[in-house]
Length: 539
Image (cartoon, rainbow, N blue to C red; front, side, top):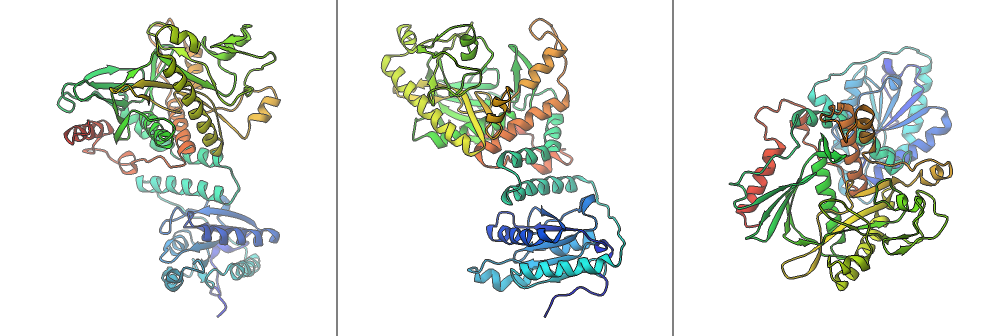
């Protein structure tokens, strides 16, 4: 039978000029294909069409102001409840398209379980399975009917913690849907997702207070460990076990001083490193034993070479050791390399990976050649040749992987060391936002042609704020970083995590958006997980 609405189609459909294509399963290519087909068929009609993500098959969707008079086409898989939920909560007319892949006989047989329950003010019509053409025709008839009636109304929604969580989930799903529909690229999708995370980031900032997100691990959790506090990581060395426990914190420093504590920074740095260590283990063995907590990595104790292997694909930078600083000053011999004339800032180098080591000393780091660092006894000739070759290989792989994520890996640094058997291994971190420079690939060429700096995702804006407020090198007390800047830097760290790994950052919604009384804090989880790892013999 031909689908039809009751005599009244509800006040929201009156004078309808918009159609919302609402998708539950944004991870389902068949469902996305049907939505794209509907979009293509509707565009010539002159209706404003918007593809929107519900979040999942059992979520909800709150109409935006511009969508108050819209008709909804709901693309739903077997068992989905969101079409009825949306119809009842919004009062909008819904055309239901049950979705089942042709080869999926089980789903096709169960498609009747899609809940298609409407009301007088929120009618729902269901077309045949995968019936995109029927849905488009029905929408056109509704529009024609609604044009003759001419009235509209609005609705309201709650704003409690659950609603806030749902709003974030929906915004994330919407970004993923827009990416799948081809209306935005991978970088813009990640930008939109991470902007939606800002309430979660701010909640964690307030929870952290003056802390760094990872407090000291007590001696009963790590008996016999000696603690070393670095700029970002706390390192616990266990000589007897020949292990070290690295805890990444939220500490943010510059000008040789602590500036702020950044929410989720420790988790981001540690999890990005773990991802890269896993991806590159066939290129170079690393010191990782395991990661019992998002902030923690347990590694083999190594003797670290007093050299940082800086690898560059572009000429840039502003520090005393940067390649561009030396080149601009007229130097044409840098870290053992003869540099050609005519290079300009931010341009790609003539090779894919140029290794430019710097010393790793307590007082001051300085550029050094491979020949010089061997002569100074920092490593043997064989060790230098191995590390140089592996650093290049790691960088080329990292650059290719970053490009797939819409990024340019500009430069980075690696640290190598030897384990107790004398084997050379990769240590510390790899391709993190702290050890690497990333630019946005899609805008690079246009900005360079216009004489602009490349679009980057880094922490320079926070440094500039402090320089504008005080003399960070001389003033005894620094001003407190504004909350919005701290939150933005945290968002950028999460943004890079999602772009690089292709995974979504995991937040504990319930503890961040509701009363956390009695809830275990991230600091407590670190201590608990490290203690369990020690008890299990993993350390």
